[in-house]
Amino acid sequence: MTKSDPGTSQPGTDAPSTDQPGVDEAVRAELNRLRESIDNIDAAVVHMLAERFKCTQQVGVLKAEHQLPPADPARESRQIIRLRELAASARLDPAFAEKLLNFIIAEVIRHHETIAGETRDSTG
Ligand SMILES: C=C(O[C@@H]1C=C(C(=O)O)C=C[C@H]1O)C(=O)O
Image (cartoon, rainbow, N blue to C red; front, side, top):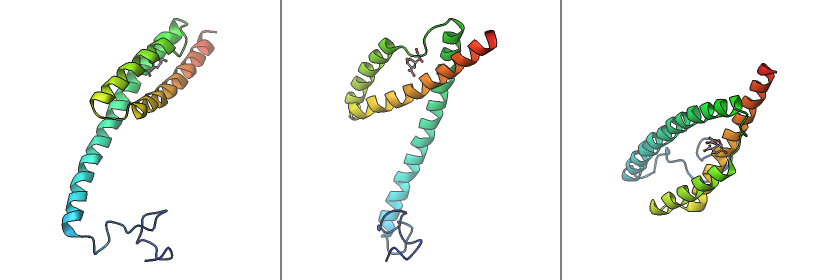
């Protein structure tokens, strides 16, 4: 297989696609089984994040209506401590858990700033 042989490798790699003939049937079956679980977990993550953002949007509206700042660093510090402990007990890298939470919170704060701006515009 070469790079000029389209469709036989994953984009950006020279590794053979698992869809190719020649991949052991038992390996393919195990991979498919694991990928079905991964797809279910990814769906659950998306649904849980959607629910989280529904809550944080409501927090954003409440803060905007009461002139509270979009970010609450003290609350974030407590969440990070708690999440790192949860991660450690679940054998997930606490640094990864912290990065993920910070990534999500940054997006939430962006939403809150937008809501605050819109609220100021509409109330004058
Ligand atoms: C949702 C809030 O607003 C911000 C976003 C947070 C979050 O996404 O968990 C936490 C703290 C705040 O910086 C909040 O204050 O509770």
